[in-house]
Image (tube, rainbow over all chains, first blue to last red; front, side, top):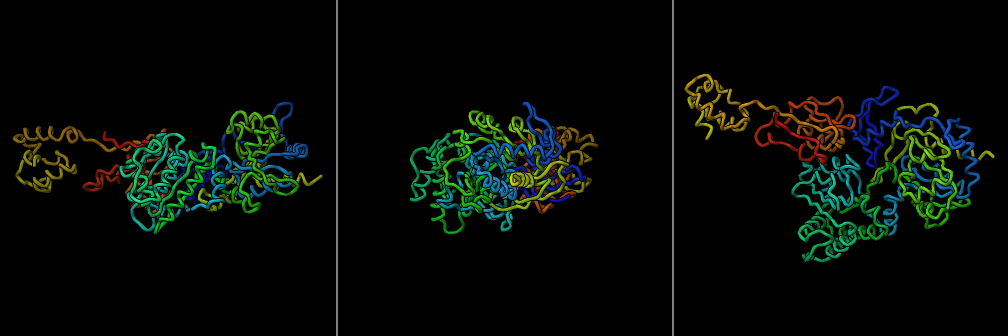
Length: 432
Length: 155
């Protein structure tokens, strides 16, 4: 039995215990259902084990050389390739992905563009107070879940942040207050006690609530006379008193805020609200944590930022980074691409039909460990090892802390890691 | 005091304590009516025994056993029950900071997450059976489960 980091979600629990018999993982302790599914992927029915190319409309098993030759052909024919995915690969593979994009003058983007990437972009201008999981466990006394159903999307998060007892206190749940702001009554509401605050905000009114909070935080003793964004004034008063009175508060920003509103204003005003609260705070601070889905979404931001100075949506041309406002969404919308390389994700089923239709009309190279809607219509499929189980690497947790992933089993024969595959494609392109 | 009226009030100490102390413990649920042997054996107390049985209701009349029922379909292995259970916290220090406890487990440990589902290990160390006073009414696992998968039952 050994403790390894679980790659089921962005929490990257490093306390999961597994036992192997050399071929499969037969004992899993401490992992949630999401993590268990990730380990089960090893022997799943939809696992890809051989390179495939499309011949006369049908996918056929071929050797690596034939598949790489086909990829070379597709890439040399295309002048505007897209690279997308990379949130379920190690940072090393992401680095190779950026190198490949630079080489083929492509456009590279990760899943964070439809997730927390937007918030990090805004944070580059306004600044952002971050915190780490250990600090949350040991110090925090106020937890706000804003637009996030953590109990179901990141099952072990509430267990770690809300119920654990910190090093400095022997009490856990008793001193921690949780506030959930959500229009829907989700499973997360199940952990609430009488002291906690459940706010059923009206759909799409987050911006209004943040603006009123910002105003009220600046003056003393006054509370609004009528309800705000569907929240009655007593509840609003409790929210405000908690926000201002907490010693170490954390606001968990979920998909509810990150994705639905198209403008960046919600995030910008939320960051400003935190700054206003912190300016009044005498000890401790209020901080933010962005909740993502895929386990290494932050990793791509970090790698891209360290190499190019831009955290996502990188357009290369003639070996140089070009300033662009495009994202993967606008690129596909405008039909401004002629082939795509998808690494470890499934855009055909994630994106709306209008986008996936455009995507499907161009050649797709899919690098993944399992069959998906994308691999079903791909022209070339390269099977990859499962990062975190069959190959090691670095991944960033949701709180921007790097975690070293471990290798516990060897990948099946004929399967390479993401990093190796991308390296082989780069080498293949070098040989003329 | 209500219960004391229905006991033999002889302080025979066959149960090991005075009748007053027996009444008190009967109220807390630590002893059963059947522990008072004269009440059952001697016919002159029969009326009192029947009245007492009626007073305490079916809870004491028929023996009820504690069950903690975990619904496998609802459970998603979040491990909140593992962390918040006071018995786990006492005997498995990693759970204090929300970590998964060691394997093989401590003999006192109540819950464990295996293969993504919560498993009940040994019920005999549960606070509802071992602790005294108010701690006996512990039901944190039931109230905190966000999926409402845990039910404490007396069958």
